[in-house]
Length: 82
Image (tube, rainbow, N blue to C red; front, side, top):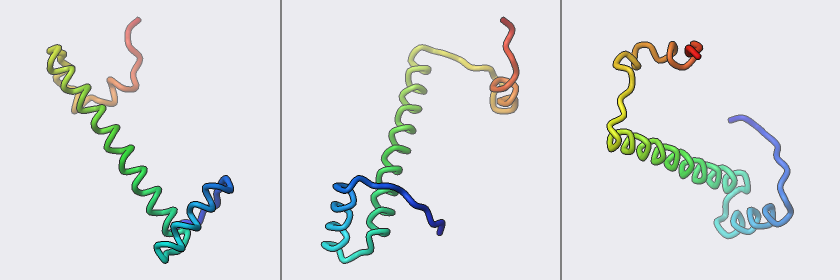
């Protein structure tokens, strides 16, 4: 594990402390679990947004370059003709 330090508003700290006492867990464990749950939701929402974009592209019949999977660096990092 990596040790880190954060500043918390007093009210948030008290909420963490209360949950930790109620669940008989360390405050650090409560914080880790809350972060894991929150980040998992955010990852899912990003994935859902990408799927919606893919559906829209399919609906509008938008096609990308056929060699995109092998030349993705070229399309991402080379300058386009202006």
